[in-house]
Amino acid sequence: MKALIIIISILFLSTKCFTIHAQEKKERIHPFEERKFTHSIVFGLNIGAMSPTSLPANIRKINKYDPQFCPSFGYEMLHHITPKWSIGFSAKIDYKGMSITDSVAYYRVSIEQEKNGQTSKFEGDFTGTNYTKARNVYFNLPVYAVFIPNKQWYYRLGGYIAYRWEGKFEGSVSNGYIRNGNSLGEKVIIDHADFDFSDQQGKWDLGIDAGAGVFIGKRWSVQANLQWGLKPVFPSDFTGLSFKMYNIFANVGAALRIL
Image (cartoon, rainbow, N blue to C red; front, side, top):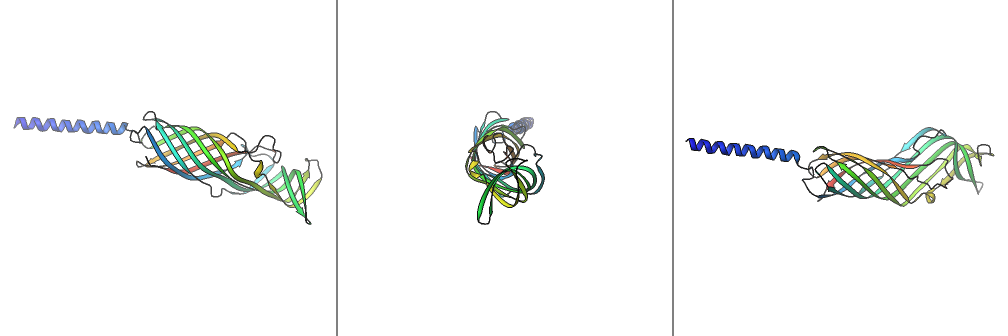
């Protein structure tokens, strides 16, 4: 009987120790199950604008903003260096766009006005209502470090470079006037005039990529990232606008691990 009690005690203690060890291992285990590499499909929506870093004084009021439907989808690979640190790489197709209506004063712009069957071109300072619509398609390559402090959250920080495949940047001005040439130039009444700067946009974009996410089960995660462009949308010799514009977009989406 004593031998049986001893054997049962040993088995109980062994099982207890094994359970504790398994729990400790589970606590230490990487959220990606200790794989060296993981591969995921990522998708989401981009919300933001081609915008100056601060609101210029000649934009007096934002009357309407529409983020449009701007999907994002692609592939992500993570190389897990330690249980808490990884290096990430993505290859994505990103649609980035917006439309905005604002009230402006002495807003530098190049426009074309059609009147009585004739088209007149003006470049100068406009006061009135401005409408801008932009939509570009980028092939985006972010690279970033990923910090995983626990089994629930992760954070990333890095950069991206993107190539613009195609896109539009166009709009109109209305209900105002333009000072042709500069603010002291001839005053021309503008009922409606169009502008199209699509072909003047640069082909390349690069900037900062930062974000955070939360794991949902073993394969899913949801995340929110910010891409802040450091390269202006238009080249330095572009004179159609008086200020530099950058791609500033947040991405809200999900990732599905496939391997």
